[in-house]
Image (cartoon, rainbow, N blue to C red; front, side, top):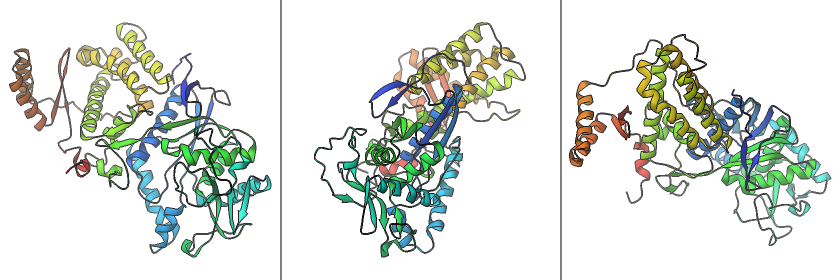
Length: 491
């Protein structure tokens, strides 16, 4: 937690503007985040959305709020039913593999778990009740055992997504969970059972069937957070139709706004190409792990990018993220060992520099989670700390280390230092190569400098040229872009 009188600005999708954040209840935040549909392993685009909500929650807690987060698990939809029908076993058996894999990935990414992970299949009675409310209010109607939401009963339909709904066709119904983004048609709340559904069905007053995709989130968000809550998050691809439909059915039933702030993260590309099933480049986490289960470099890449900026996951980007994260961790490890049990200093030069770094970090984060600018403030402190760490006293080392721990509480980018661990020294041969390269650069012998940089890179050492001189960092010997190679164009 940090004392900071500044207002927090959050970008609100429907208003297309930054708004001062004011929760319904002072000091408490209720947040709903759209979770995975467990028909397969979640891909890295999904995890950008989950990590965005993780950083948002962590920062609100850092700023002193009590945060309650709900993230749903969609364990029944058209794709899941299709998969269950073509495999032996039950729906429960099919989705369990992907639910287990999802939580394993969250732990590998150091995700601060949500308070609740409700499953759609465990809330069918509540969905039936909500659908019945809509029927009773005239906002939904039955046809051949299915129930549809009537968008004509919700005059503001389309405003959230800034959609021109003038050309919509009244009475045209859509049953699919996945339909064209420019369609504006009555959508299904309850799907009548068909032979293709097999055993995936529940009894209801409308007949045997199963819920539509959109009704699930309305039901579970309101059950756990109330009919109106503070923040709803998700990816840009969910703005329409999913979130627009959530709003329509929820607010038609309650007469109240569903969420006060709607926040959406931008897409993830792979090597400059849009991630899509047709291109075969929907990577999951295991395909980009650099070594063993460590996904710290990927987390660093995601959380230090602005959530509203399209992100290109490439070999170069991952390399840079791994290098930057190693640099911060190396500094933190040295500070950790230096500070021993000393309390942080409350005055002096380093106390002033840490305070400036903290202020810069908070000012940037308060501006719609501007993490790139926040990290500039962090490295603005890290640069002089790297030079002075060997001469710092315990108290100065402690105050800088505590600030990095504060940053970590928000971004989750530090490793736990090993007790008694000693930072490995760079072999003399490699240290001499760095010095020789620096001399070649001063002499403008770029050919020699480039040759030495390549040799160091092959040895697992990355060199960054800074105004203060060269800085080196280790990287994994394994090619971090190996899993990405097969997705390069024209190869």
